[in-house]
Image 1 (cartoon, rainbow, N blue to C red):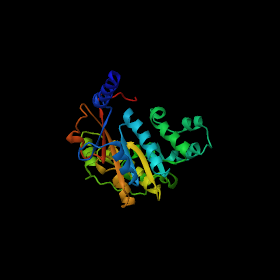
Image 2 (image 1 turned 180 degrees about the horizontal axis):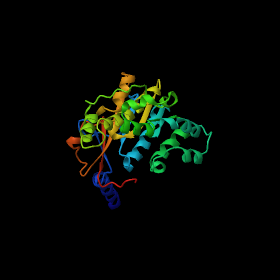
Image 3 (image 1 turned 120 degrees about the horizontal axis):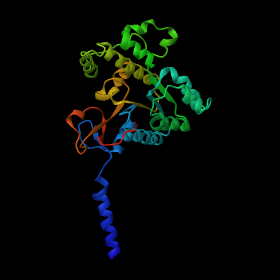
Image 4 (image 1 turned 180 degrees about the vertical axis):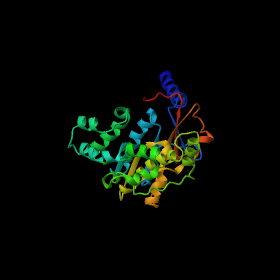
Length: 287
């Protein structure tokens, strides 16, 4: 009998003490109410597109991206396609060749412009796509063209060849500088950070990602896209451009934020996304 009660006491300690002692993250809805992973997954299943807005150096974000992708694959019976800001549109051929087994991993990794944290943070997603044959779309504008916009202005894209323009959304690219995200960048640029070219360079990335997501939507399935949170926070950026191409697209957004105290979502972080994953500021970083 003593051991029975001892076991019960130990179980209660696990349930009410240790399990909530040092949570690695808390999920909130856009109004700041506590949510859970199952609700996030359920809404994802009802969406055409999931924009997973990460903090690039956050290990919890990368772990949840992979877990969420695996679970969406199972729940949707494999009807998913993946895409990411971390791959540029002119690398799509190399992506396709690697995913199909045409070229070796070494050749792929030597020739694609990979982010420094690729092996720890994005390679697992790409390998999952390869294993499950889901497809993986490079969505970001080639960085040389974003640089052109920053240094020479939005109209500089008109001077590109027809071959180069295949890697861009259709020109001219509309930019609404009244959107709060771009307006904030414009205000920042008043201190000498590129003037109007600063928010324009951000917008061409959003436009490119939005266009190539819209172009690759599944008729019956889900597009899961990984991007920096700023590109999809507050239902702007990528979402705005997807809706320009396909207004009826159902989009779910996720944003990863950090706070010193994660027991309550701060007012500054409310409304950023359908689901906000709040991680302690003290969490280790991947780089």
